[in-house]
Image: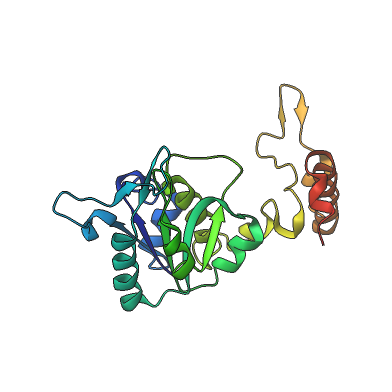
Length: 226
């Protein structure tokens, strides 16, 4: 998978993709993430990419010209499956959407900044708008890191155990069950006996029961979804 990200502060994204699972995905050649500095397409030699709002109001707006030039140039070279704008008023990012995006070959993310981007870019170039939650960040960079991480770990071969992602929270609208590791007893707290039994059928049944119970307690709304 090829992922491209347009940002005015791409430096914010260097660390998330240089370590751990995302680094492994890149080293295996399974996912390539490329950051692009929007000021490369600035309207003048001073790197201008934003301006005041028409109609007045606080906050600067990212301009049409730099964004359109960047999108058109990159799309001509990579033919993106989706051009995604990260914005608080987009559709909420959930596991099902991560699953769907992980099947794509090429994605472009636009990181908003300041007061957002000119609406005309959204109207004519953006194919999908995504929010990672009902709150406002200083820019879309952290949201891009969250989404790319969620997508990347689903790509076959990225995780050492390829079945691991299938049992994450929110797969099948359930939270993950409790997990335990050695030692079997710590401070008098014991691992549930069923997990030590070696009976894989009983273990699977216990985990499913625990997942349902945890979801009913913490996120009952998930059980109401179709």
